[in-house]
Image (cartoon, rainbow, N blue to C red; front, side, top):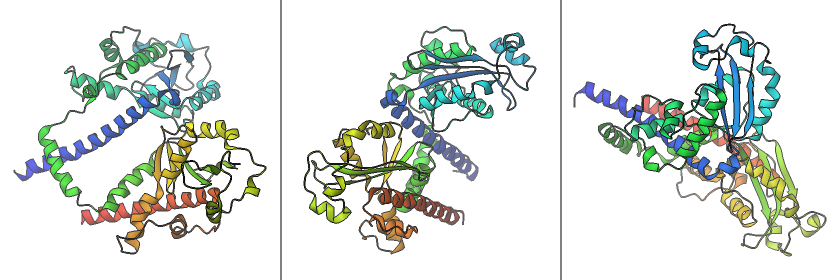
Length: 426
């Protein structure tokens, strides 16, 4: 193979790798949404604007819920843009229609209240709509956004209707599922998007597969074999940095118990967010367990401390509300906490676990140059990153120790990747 051909193949393989990673991330998100659609309480959103430039403004915003109920539907007067002749040819929203309407700032609180209530935003080419909302001063804090246009580019390519490089329009997508509608009216677009979303939600997986060039894929697989020689720690670093920078809602959780048997109970539960804000911290009187001498030697939570406390049942709704809005549960040895919450009847199926100890053990082994070292304890991990509190085995303290460790590991992993990239470039 000539050098020019090899370079071309390498560029294509690099591009394909990025596309495959994005595709995998998108399909993971789509599968997560499939399984948790009720918890995510989705809305469908669409806007019509004065144009597509950064200084253009919203003329109409429509939002409906997953049942098709109208949540918000308003025309708005633009504050700065006076002419939108080209956009008018598309959506037919004239100056006359909006001259007596309110500015979008008038509805800011109402819109933000809706966005706060609904975790998932669905739309067709919705990222441009989100950008317009942000430029209008609307805050979107922890919403998950699903642009179903990508799914239709996959579907149409697999059906040999269109090349994936060309995104099918919402009109094309709706026609595919036998829906005729008044395109470029925001409310009509919302209704059509909902119809398309519900339809594609039940499509077979093979219809949403990613098509690729066989020769380029073969070359990429050969490149990946070389990549597999990369150290375990570097691979973990990539995974950890990606996870850390993910915008999903994350909590740090820790609990203390009467023991480690299946019938043991939670007697303290603490939850903080990644900013270190306390979300929950309570002691509980156990319902059935009356003795926990072995556990007491570890956490020093005795019967007398819990005599006047409520049972965990009194806090169930408050705890579950926090868990319902959580995407990632971070902890040190979090699998134990996760399973115990399940046994006590809490719904955590939608939450992804992040065990800080799984990552630190490899750092620890590298520090001491000993691959056989046992998994370090939380006190060893957090002390390494400068955590000075000595009240370990109090679940709130352990949460803060875990948070310090979580952030410290991120910095370490960034350096690991930086060193690796420097070596590869040299």
